[in-house]
Length: 279
Image (cartoon, rainbow, N blue to C red; front, top):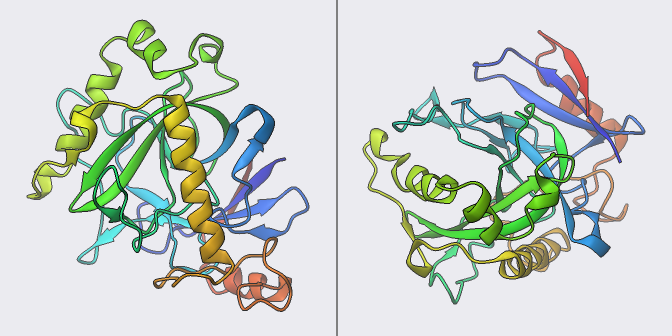
């Protein structure tokens, strides 16, 4: 399964967008249409890369926009960039999200005692390659960190690209501690402090800031997939999210986006600086 991205607008501007197409050339939502699993039998998941390692622009799947393109986050009218948290430069992993997952803001997690953050579940991909923005990769999950961000549950899945040369040696969270000493500690430190330069307090963590193992992480992902299923089947409040999709919902669903509707969405966005990339 392969996807292409279609770039609209200029990077580092408010109008910049990355739209997704599948192998058939159909526009798709990276939130709803890309399958969660790349190989369910092996627990291999798809990840949509939003932020390549070492970069600072806070890019994210636009969950409230039609077809959910990737765009840069905005605060008070200004584009958001994360500060360099000494001694790090930008994001210290390839950062993205698992499609077809949702951290339900109406569900209080029994471990964190906080509700979800209303986003797909986040992933830190720790392989050697610097990925491209919008790249859809296949990962195996190694563990998860339970961050509490301004009173909301914000899981951070730790994973590695299955095509990475280190993937064969990394199978659980303990392998990272053994083969990449200091990486997990740096991850906690980064997430704890990355909002402090913006005047925010340090983030907190459940489980005494310790990572949970692979099995716990996979069950957490499956739980957020269940919340997404309820969302896309209209069994729960969408909370302002845009659930339009081209591949998942039945034709009689209000969330079904026709080919003509999808084209109209794209045509409504500036075509300046148009380009395509394949993954």
